[in-house]
Image (cartoon, rainbow, N blue to C red; front, side, top):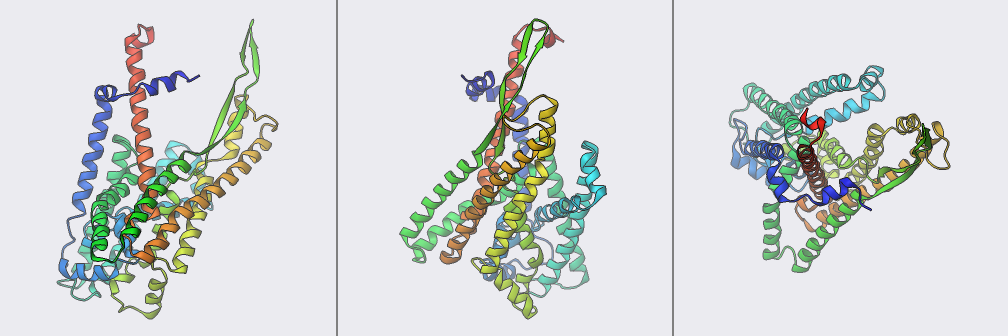
Length: 443
């Protein structure tokens, strides 16, 4: 029999949405913030020639710079003020989280609750500014060496470019935090999501144009569309998959009545890390060669060799990408889910897994199950992200139909819809409390 919450969720409709004023305000705020982000991707940095930049980018967009352009919503191709997007923030988050495991100070801050989390976020912001300065300076130098892209090369151009790009990254970081606090969904993920979705119509038109010109056959295009639908369905199925551990609570007597004796479940998701591993792996691959492709082959031989090895479909790129995804699957899962804490909480509330001794043995059992689930989840993420990459390298299909982009779009959509449903559910409960003549409601 469905619970009261499930029955209430089943009755959610558009009339309930129309009455949820707080939710509508959050949605409008989110849409407005994403619109500001999209407008910023069309404002170029000062001192560059757009025509010369477009010519250089057209030669390099088949490589890893094309992936960077996908995450930025086309801002890299236009060298806009948001060209760095929030990738420095993601890279800084990776560094801080890695340092948390080796630094006693950061580890203690992590255990200090809300205050410690705010301090770690502050360190992440400082790291974001530092990385953005380094990447912005590298891009300015790379643009100066890319031919006639820069109208007036020199120190002034480098300083103005660094200030513009760093300001754009800091603004996006602030905008993402505002969306998370005052809007719906995770702000950072929604910014990446908006960039990918905004370029989908152009990518679809480009694919159809390739078919019209004969570069892609009709059969390949149909197979591509079927593959996209199949990958989306597979992602939804795997993201909703979970292992439920049975948790039993003992009976206890209070006076003449017996309480407890109920059973519950501890849900463990197959993919606990979500969309984080592909984003982290991509950002690490993008970081060292942000400038390399803008040298137009005029850089050192070793740099050109690395750039070629990190092209789509190349063995080094596939190996590093797969390794990064697998590593961050286990690393991020270990950060967000602590089996020892979960076992202690179950023990405090009298819960236990049937057949497993409470405490340390329960923590070991949960860790064993979680490790097996994470292994399957890592294989699933690697398969979804790498299979389309190989097909893209063979048939020159736009990046927007790749596994990483589909994974981000589907995950962010599911998370945002879940938050919208949570707000609607909370509004429904508030309505029920107001209608009922309860003493607590009148207070």
